[in-house]
Image (cartoon, rainbow, N blue to C red; front, top):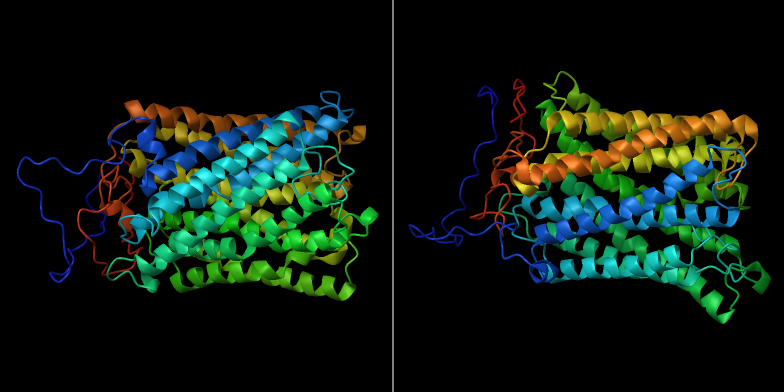
Length: 561
């Protein structure tokens, strides 16, 4: 490793007035790592260590990722032929519902906060753990319980309403397992609220001496803003799904028009939660990308205050734009114009982030390690997805492409292309910190390139399909759309290889990977100033922060081992 790169200096000890742990006696055992504590299921299932809980979440959401991916695989195979001969129309409805429910609520929403946030957020602010360790463990149990309830309904009976549970598809006219699926999502919502509360209290109360609000890493700012959305929006989702269950079980007319209910009311309530939920998914990813861009460009973040403020602005604007999902649902023209204007405004703080990432990379000493490849891919995919969102915010264009494959392409460019790229980038970045081991550089770069190639081949044709008028959620389609659907399915096969590949080389690294050392990337973040893997309480002594999180010196190029 080159020595001409300025490394963040060791953190100086806390002042004498602050109590510190006594140094270990000669020959005394060093505090064990979270990975070398007593093994066995009990030690994991009853742990209150935020790092172990992050690993529990990682295993759980990875399982759900492959379940949701399996449903998507069958969908794409069915759409190779225009007549859709692989599965019946009824099963197809259940498959795309299962894919949406599992991927949205059991992977996309929780994955970065519960896995990466749980693991590194306390270390980033110099804390020993989250504010409520037992509540953190309880949140994993509640999340798992809710997911099991919903997956049981989805896999053994099926739900055909779509992941949005729109009436009348979710009313008593549907004989599928809508109520158990909704109950599981409601239970999972309590886990989301617990995690959000824990993060907010932790950031407010457990920052190390000198860790002012102006020195917080952007990843912490992003998770803080996300947590505010979790606390404010999730109860609305729980309420509206509970009302669906009450309507089906008691026959009370709330949303079902045959009972005197109003289906538009459901859409208002559902999207009041679900559009802010888009930012629950994407804001943590933006935080990850900021950490990667600064580290692998060897530059101080351009416009730190603007990037931090943009996170809070995105969280606030997210509550004001839900009506753009309802331009064709019969709401008033005045409301549609207002929501259209607000939807354009929410693009401003997002554009600030993209501009600042680009400015940070400008004339930087960029190293295209796997995490940086994912960060660059995120910026590209998020920008394309965001620009397509501006088309959907225009009333006239939305009339044409509403409920077509254009919507699917737009959503996946942001949520799957963007957010999953951010998660994979963060996972590769912090994997040496989590495990103390290095993974294969060539294989990790290949996986990133396969994911991007497969993603573009999968979803770019869907923009064209949507513009040409192919509706989404249909079991079959006119023959003239077959070529584009075959291209999309071929891209999905490449994408699947890219997603599965890290599963092998990351596990390989656990046994055969080279030791990582405390700071293999020569990063300046506080989490890199402790051992890899970290000790149980993260730091041997409470650090004192004297500078910002991104004070790199441009010039070094060796980010490697």
